[in-house]
Image 1 (tube, rainbow, N blue to C red):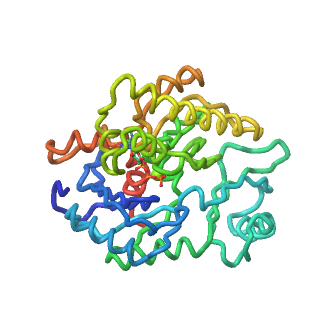
Image 2 (image 1 turned 135 degrees about the vertical axis):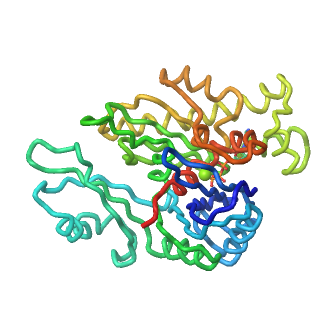
Length: 351
Ligand SMILES: Nc1ncnc2c1ncn2[C@@H]1O[C@H](COP(=O)(O)OP(=O)(O)OP(=O)(O)O)[C@@H](O)[C@H]1O
Ligand SMILES: [Mg+2]
């Protein structure tokens, strides 16, 4: 939907397993204004394990999304999904410059990739406050296959847009949650555990000071609940999705269909949190934030409060943004947990 005309905004494009999510934001003196937003389904088979399998079909969907939302901006950012990215913390001499770090990275991580390092695209950041005792610093490396970056870049330019950046998904999500909020002169004491419950995948990201320290995918998501509703009602997929999204389940049905889904989902989330704890982690987790379409499943938040003993909130990155057309406000608020990545991308400034 189009909310106001201007071509100065930034478009965040999140290409997921089954959708193109598009959000256009205009930076203001304070905050952002939502310019346009849409969700465009992708044809089956277009994406395989979060990789673009059929570039033409994705280009077509992005074009349709741009038209449907009546987008005026031309600058766009995309993200490589966390499942296709390797995040690694490296300990390096604190005397090294960025050039020296860059030159050293292939030697440090060469064996981590099942393909030649020439085929790898990478970026790194020194984690500012993490200094080892022996004068070493921690460098966070994000790396993925160059092919995946090239496909995303091709898709954006073939859709007629100007690519500004290819980001890493959890970094975009951290930006949308404003996790970078570093207190003056200090650093955050706690990590944020962000659990993104998508259609096919549930991912735990452990975020600290705007960085993702740990990500773990589990191949379980909202599709499993749609399948159970479809089997229970003996109906089609679309109808099952509608029943789920519009909360048309009786108390009995919630107990029969939704409760077993929640049991499994909570087990997966708890397991991911335990595995993070077992990594000899950097910081303790101070809060849990839920995102993705599955985050609003009735009863999930309450169960996680009981299991984790943490503050649990559902992400709403758009809540404090202005919007020129109030008519769309409720739709935006409902879609907001699904728009975290698109939002973090649209919050990037121009390069
Ligand atoms: N109100 C709702 N209640 C429960 N589930 C919902 C609701 N709205 C959407 N969903 C579910 O959320 C899922 C889609 O969420 P999301 O958009 O985050 O997934 P995705 O990013 O496309 O998938 P993935 O991350 O797995 O590639 C679908 O399974 C959908 O049925
Ligand atoms: Mg997703």
